Image (cartoon, rainbow, N blue to C red; front, top):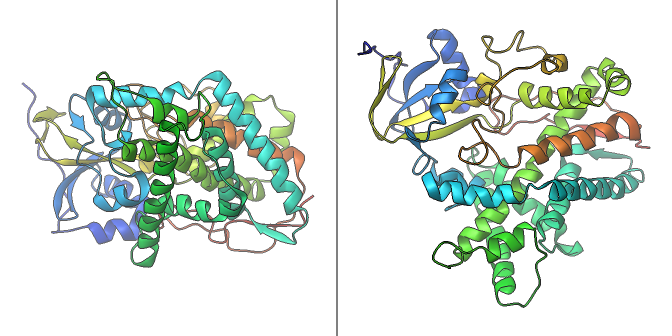
Length: 416
């Protein structure tokens, strides 16, 4: 029998404010100071186990030991992900719902997304050339919402583009915010869900036609084993779970532009090396820069791991950012080095910017392939298709802002 050990712990009654102050580095800082990849603390008034690293990630995504139901704070459900969506499901129900998402990731559908992104980019560039300067983050958000809606089969009228963009992007900008910013996210979700619910009802009543192989069609028409439709509210949440993450790629796009500006020598490498270097570069952006900080789960049953006891019902938090910067997994993790992916032999638990494990039965993001493809298209435009100037601005990003991005959103001027 494995000897039981006392889990390292952070002293104090509550550390929620510490988490907000340190943001992405909260868990990593304590893993370093406690010299342990696992420790106990208290967050939001309850005991929580925090952990990071490849072995911890492999444990965390073991669905026999952990469940997602009940792990997500209410404020996150009311802004970021909605209620009843795939992120909160477990077991067979999760697998069945995840298959709906993965059915949208066919080769044909992915290529259709490529064409939509290229089309929207070409239109956007024509507009940008007529402006003295743009804020890339803001422009990318709107562009991606338009592309995501078109790809998902969701009709979007010209006069509602800005309004819908604000509603959708407020969902991922607000979960960790307080005051007006948080309430803007809640209101944005409520309005966006109502919009999508109305469309679903119209599809089901044959008032509008949804194109097959789109998200609107798939989630509107799907029936369970009993022959029943998904509840309208749940179907709306899942369609937004397609559109919202695509719009959030605007964060990565801002970091691509920042990287090319700060490391101009990489442009020549991208131009002169084979197409695989696009993949290395994009993966390093996803590893290096902050995106999702953490994921949470609840212990399903008592068990012991490496001598540490996990009690049923305990909140457990995985350090996504810290795992992607773990010196035991990544040589010189604080350096931006795309070449590290040239001969990378990592596992689904060592590189986890959008979750870990497998796609079908696990909780790895179904849209990861789309993310990579969209980032490559923008990278190609920045390197080969566009000329622009970068005026003085604040390029810094704050680890206690979640999600974070360059403070000024990356300003570009004189675009040609």
